Length: 128
Image (cartoon, rainbow, N blue to C red; front, side, top):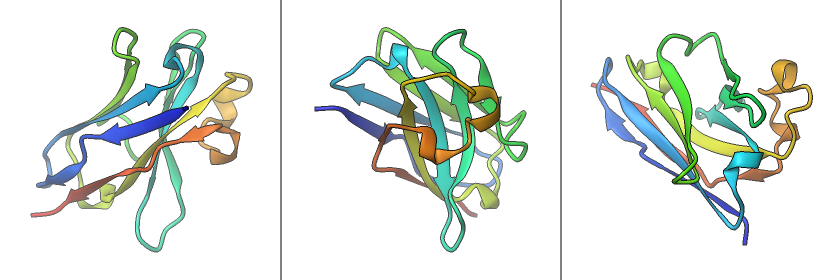
């Protein structure tokens, strides 16, 4: 059974950090581009970051550049999203998603429709 499971969410104060994990079962993440998305109440889902499968290229939304870092741990079949300097506007449910192809990733990584598999999400709340 193909499954993605996110973890690591929680409540953190502004300026704090969290590391989200996206673990796969039933398939190997090595061969997939992995994207992180988020959705806040009343807002559309937005792409946060992505890491390619071919050359490890990474992509970030302008709102998180310099604060978030995406990475892979091949041995653990897991992708991470390190989130630093968190702001209240980062509050959302965060989802990871897997895409079987890197084709066009540079310009469409933040389009959810291209991803094949999705996790159930993890809540991140940034509040004092």
